[in-house]
Length: 165
Length: 351
Image (tube, rainbow over all chains, first blue to last red):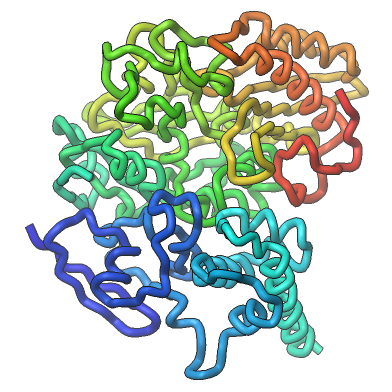
């Protein structure tokens, strides 16, 4: 039996016909839309390489049935920059060497963007490490990742201060 | 993953009818179920997707002082609800000590209650497991069993229930609202999960088609906000299941314990309420000696199921620490490392 679903992916509406309900969001993004920035690491919800935002919240796309997310608004790593202008979190990862091989990086960046929107960690490195524990980095770039998040968060805090001043 | 039919019911009644069929199971976020299906551990013929049902994602304060948490509220939304975290701090801390931020954003209240054990032999389809395949045997019993049960286990199964959330919920007398083929009913959370006995494949008292609609905290649960903690020992600081955990909640009046609540996680096939320990604390001063006595009573029936006798002493010490920290007072904010016994928290006294 075929199932029709529609998603908003990086701002554009996309319609799909699924001939098999077993498709995960991760595989739909990679195989049907060729958005291969979202990585398949463990495929079991343990490494965080597949992190995307669904309706503004970070989740593991490897453990999310596409068919169950009919109507969802999805943001992937391909949708965070504005043209050639990097997202502040992307720029901060480059500035602080927040990666080595880069495989986990899209998931790290999407997770960091989601975490900053959750506003639970603020600029506390210990809380940032805890709130990013769902993203593994086998190269061990954690120190740079935390520094990058701290810089991006400082940018957000500065903007908020300027707005309230 | 085995093929399955996908059904998206429009109402609770349709969901119950669809899920009552043989081979059917409910799908919420799927953070545990889809993982089990990828490994061929769970092989449902039909998934009944309840995530689009209306009205199950609300947190409601009821007129009598109860709190009603819809089954589809996410673990993160509940833990981050400021009023909830202030009123039921040990529950919020337990939620935030579980899984990762990504999983907490997806995972639901109902799904957390019904998550399956993380016993490695349950997950390994080449191993014998009475829970996965009734009557096949238990390879955990003579295998790697450092993290397995020390209370309520049987020769058929020594697996533990992995939920953190359930532990303080149990301490606070949570009630589970269920819709089934014969209408609505409610049971105490303590009655939801079964001990293994000879039938470890039957993990809960739920019947085919039964759908958890909500979890309710009774009015008395509000009385412990000032003295409540959840502590959890795990093999790494974050993103790991409990080896042993404890939820402690006290009502202290005039320097005495008016009422104590204590539950343990990671020790049995169900979250474990320690009523004998609660009884010994009633009416006494919250002292180290009293907490030691409570810890002995909480683990009085414990026995190792393998290479895990250390868990009994560990559980005693975590009970004492959790009670000590609860007596010192709930921290103003959930610690940076939720539920960690290694975090530096003001008022911490080593047990």
